[in-house]
Length: 192
Image (cartoon, rainbow, N blue to C red; front, side, top):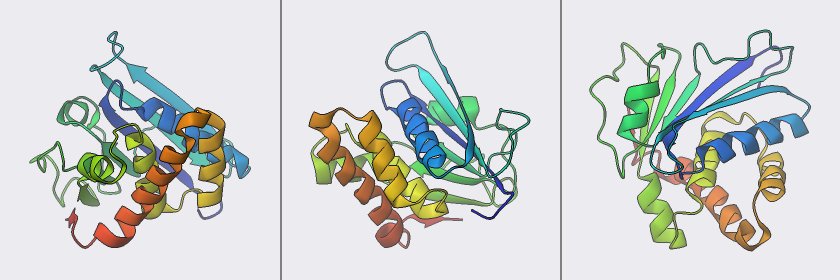
């Protein structure tokens, strides 16, 4: 991240996918690097299945307004999340969708976003790790691979701080898998 740059991220999906925890982990990784961070979240009354939103701003300077207003990156893990929280994107916003569970949305095109990355996130995580538990951390690997907003080492340290010990190895594998998906599947992923 360049000096004096503000990076805005919005993640949306359904309750139980761990997106709020993912935003907290990414915030922690940025703080480990001495960056200024704000993190916020919205979730429905349902513990699982309701639509959630997590937002993060990372900057090298003071953050005067803590809400995401013009995201650099929008990661949508469900159609419902994209419909509810996909507004406010602009031609500077890159959008990630999970093509395992989402069709490419008609509302996204070259006129209203910078680009679209459609990767089979859920299917890849389940096939490789035999579990959905690392889905959120795989998304962090994808975000890191696309943006380099934080160093991989900082992300690993933050994951270790926030994940239960019995799930740490699985989550580290998920992080590596997300980074690998950007490196090896970006040619297979759809990008507009």
